Length: 590
Image (cartoon, rainbow, N blue to C red; front, side, top):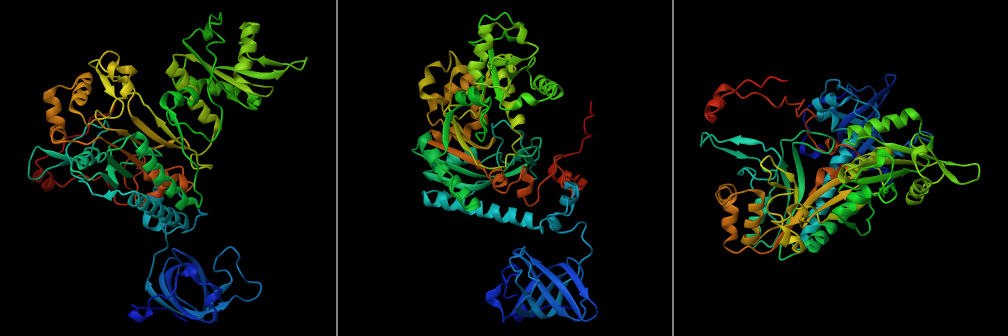
């Protein structure tokens, strides 16, 4: 039957979704709408259309010919019937039935799409993003966005159940002290002044605690002008949480409940209790504060083994090792590559030891450094690492943080586990350092933000030894990705003043930058704490994706551009004038 273009009347809308037509509908007359996935004609008397919507595909059999092509939008009316014997398609949920004696109405014609709308076709990312409206029709992308909606729904339900109230905070805000570069929005009404788009609702949600909201959450849109990568976009979404009259353990419990609910909604299985470890333990065992717990290869302390050693390569404050089980088969070329990688990461070098079985059946070492070791060092290395024949021991000797971080990255490199690959292993990392390095003026730099409460056991060292002070800050990690961060906040003016002083922030500067928050605190601030979970990262892992771009409807490329809209674009001269701005040439690249 020839397709007839034109609108449908109100009685002609669909009665069923394509992927939901089944054997229970046999004999019923149904109407379905969607996109033409495939069209096949059998002579002049019969045509087959695979019609697709977001639920799947149903086969429609049309008498005669039909003038439609791939991606035409059509409505089909027909009678559900079993497929002829031997023609069922077990790969489709609708594969046992088809629509017969169909009539077709064209709702919209379509040009040939730039790529096939199916998951089996590999398309470069720029082309996909330029035609994102076509890319999003593919089953994988449909599933990802619907999975994201399920995650959001589960998070919201969990927070509602725990007595939190959803409150929206402003997108136009004042500059905040959170470390990342902010997107600036010039004001038309106040030339020379600007808003910024929020890196997070951090200060706004603390003000809500002063306002007595008690338990707040929102699915917050946040923006940071940072370099993009697989787990980072300019725009991102987070479950943002703050609560009054709570401690750290309370917040971990609230957030764990929500995240485990989301995991169950996304995967059908509820993970067990989330493991908790201190920051110091994470660094010591895994070389990173984002530990991937899906595999072993934990760091081993060899410093006692090589204390007072005559081996120059091991004459360092810290000697650490990892063991690659079965790694003795790695070629010399591969070992050289690992050594270069270690140097790139900041190590002076990388020592390696293949563990071999000697003629007497005992384990020995095969390494250019073996001849320099004493018998005690050789046996101590084997005992400390529990390495056996066929294993490979990799050793870094350096300052503590360097040795740990280099081996921590090599551990992840050697495991080669995509972040989205199961099982899902969560970890709470607590007791982060209060400060992380110093600035150009020699003042400590806040590791999180200047409103993080110091650990009560370390308050007496805040001025005398600030780098030893722990904070009441905590991160949630999943498969080596940081899902989010939070902390107990400073609500006492005396402690806040001490922290500002350590950071080199004067009273005048504090009032200028944070006066609206400090002023609110003077009217009675309850003890409060909070957290934020990165929804993009959480959903990407559940969806089996290794880039958050695959779970965002309209992401930016790694260069920060949008191939579909052409953003960012230059503003028209009139718009610049309205804002009191003028364009200046970009600085020359070195």
